[in-house]
Length: 589
Image (cartoon, rainbow, N blue to C red; front, side):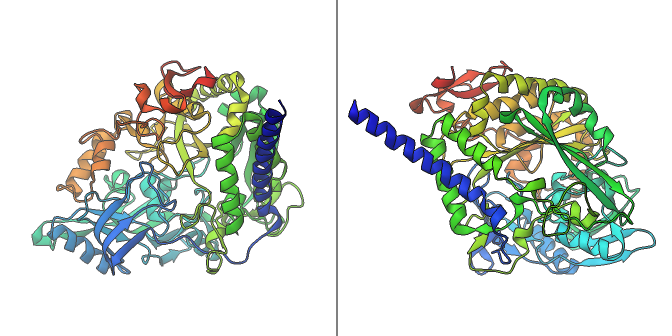
């Protein structure tokens, strides 16, 4: 008995140390604001100059963990060089894919397939082409990051009405994946709704030099498809006069969440919500534009996108791994609770760029709409970095994004709450930032949202070891299968795992129009890959059936071998959405 007591004490002490270590590192962003930060590396690396290359994403791992090879990479810095790059590949019948400066898509959008393809990086296509302040237009090259675009617009007295919250995306990349902010007013929160012109480079017959520039104006019938075809050279966006926003975050219990979720986006222009299921509460973002004369110089500097000391990021990850693999629900919830009590006030927003002094936070649109300060600082030899930098063993996560029709979102939220109520502690092991819900308006884009929707973002733990189950992995998987299967949801093109894309193209009423334009612009499929053909329903399926495929999000399990039976994870029906098939541990049944 004394030995058992001693062993139990040692185990509790180890979990306490893990909990304390994780909480301590979560506090770092509050205590330290680094002037420097090693920016993320180029996603393309080559062993022989610009030949014999691999391409990955900003996390250093695609969702299926495959290594993507390419014969070469080119870095055009002008449209003329871009045309030459496409022509060279097209004349040789080589596959092509576009890589951006930071490459934030989880799926293999940048992978040409095989090993003989060409990567075209837009990292050097990063300039403002022109600004027409009178007509409220800006034209930029496709490799310009969002940060630089919104700052250039502001310098001319203009604002981009909506954008994603992370400003490290390029304009070409965010258009290709349908990236968005949050809003149902006006044209809504998707950036592609503000595109009024494109110059894209596509393959062409030999008589036209194997490549051609296509210029599409606002009224061109192909504009709704071409935003994701070929290589975008330049983008023209419709802007608005520079304006300010007033932001207040209100936290309340989630007892009326099902009713509020359907109406909140109608009440505030830039509304969103963060559901904290383990706490039974919701953070409502009350966010509206105000007169430009309203006092305030607020700034969005979200904690997730700030630089952090590399050593502490590594310590935090190690603590998280111990809690995931050997911890208990009590320990995991204690760590999560400790982190929650030390969160930055106002989620990182400040009233003056330095400190938070109270609500409302008022600031210019370009300072409030997006952030990403971890890419801004000078190189410091990896003393600090973005949390997900693949050169360190820091944060390693899945980011599942999917949308649910606004007309069905209340019922979907009610089902999520039912799942939470069955075992609230299960959510402590999963959610790093709660469940983020943003509003997206119906779009005319062929692969845009067919109806007003709520986009759901869930960030959760991913093991570095392939096939290693997550604690309570069944919870997120059931939520996502519920959204896609029961409520007709759609996966985000840049944020999801393989299984979510199976059959997705059939849910887009205008998919046939997209495929028609795709075949017209690229009849030989040189910009297609095995993965895009699978996702678009051209050939095959994105599902990968093998041992532990469901653990990796490569399939929906239909056999225990798709889970991890050796570790007590078996294929079982969902607890609320019983048509779901998820990998559940014996402890949960």
